[in-house]
Length: 243
Ligand code: NJP
Image 1 (cartoon, rainbow, N blue to C red):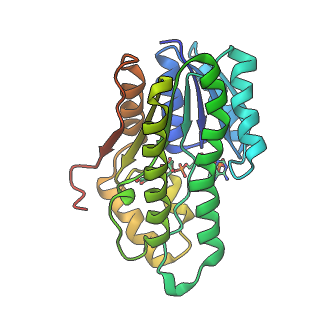
Image 2 (cartoon, rainbow, N blue to C red):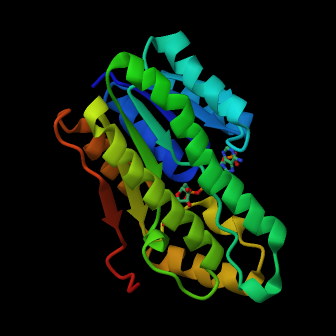
């Protein structure tokens, strides 16, 4: 399909894999993240493979930058069919460690970043008469464990925001979906600053984690559905992951 898809957090992991999968299927992808070098490498790889991609450095904690990324899609490709709010970080720790700056960072990126994506996409999609908004949530949007209180809190918030969006915007032909993975082998564990928690999480990702492409394929499946089919959540775990 030749849809125009904006992806935040496109410089690595799930975002980068989704960009490649969608571009291979003919989508025009508009890529945002903070690391320009990674974005440029990805654009070069997609273009060399015959795909269409543009990138713009975007910090999702800045509403203006998220708006500029959505506007780039319209300026470059004339539309915005899918807004994939995927950027996130996961500095897990127990609450008593009082890593307040990390709590704030998760709220800013994981929650506000998604809200800014919605704010950027909605007016454009209203004008077009439809579209699709996707956010990367998590199994942590369903269950909380020690170390995950704030991270899970941000993912619970994303789940409720996206469900509200679905209920309100279906009448405007806007589809809303969250993709909720279990452990995925990406660079996300490196955002964990507590060494014991990082080692444990990293161990799980290495021993049984999904690949980023597994999540990318789930997102591509939802985008590929006909307009009357709104898949609202895809929750996927590695087979061996218990919780
Ligand atoms: O991790 P990683 P994932 N502004 O670290 C970007 C969720 N998830 O692919 O800015 C803009 O490879 C960062 O780019 P950069 C998770 O919560 C994962 O696993 O250049 N972008 C990078 O592209 C998250 O929502 C697992 O540093 C910002 C991307 O975010 C999503 O999957 C399990 C940014 C992170 O890519 C993608 O993470 C699960 C900012 N301020 C949910 N800050 C898992 N991996 O196990 C970060 O349930 N980024």
